[in-house]
Image (cartoon, rainbow, N blue to C red; front, top):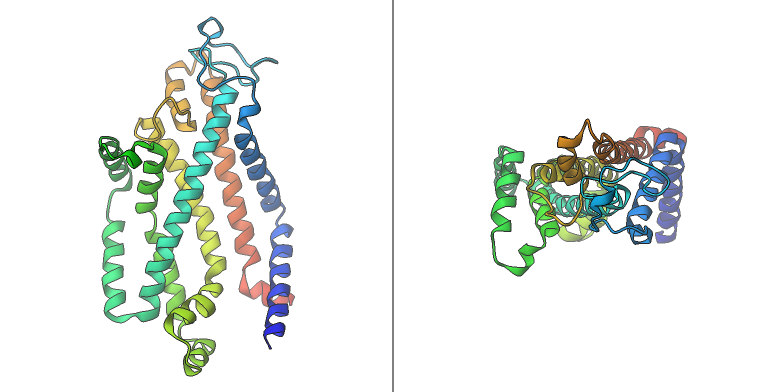
Length: 298
């Protein structure tokens, strides 16, 4: 029986992958994200440092030597964007992972047990949803940077934590809704009748059926996290210099937009293409995990 279940799960995985790559834009988006990730990881291969200054080459237009030109201090813009990609992608991925994990825990407990557990957890969730996100992010960013604890001196860690702390509520409500429906299904009742404990039922039987919506939600969370990090850096409350980020590059470019338009165009385009690619991946995942379409194609 276990072998039959394993074979069925493998067939389902193949069907989901096939449906995902039928979405041509999603497949292209995967390639774009992989290319951006590899370019950021191997940014050190660029001959120019993102922090080395050369005032004699300031505001150099894009050319064969500096593909994206140079800024007001003569720093290579391409190198700064590649290193900034490390920050944006890392913040987006890590904050999304933390918010999804926390959301799954809260939503699963709330949806499965119901009653007073559901009431307490959902009231806490509703309270967090009332916070004005951008103002709280700014206040938390400024406050945490003033702390003397060593771990808080890593501003990337700070940005990841404060973004995750204010974005777990949506996956929590999503998972709660899914658990409220799935806990009444026959396979859950059968598992209880066979003596399955709550932890096993949640992890082994209900949660795997929530993977599709959670993954789709995760792509939206990651896109929003990248935009949030860029916005915070643009306002000066995100990752601090000398670490380059797309938002901080945009911030310094705003006063030179007419003199050196490439300073604002390239980081803005990187944010745009990254967020668009992640959203298309979400669209592909949504289609791939559509239960009605999967059922009709089996």
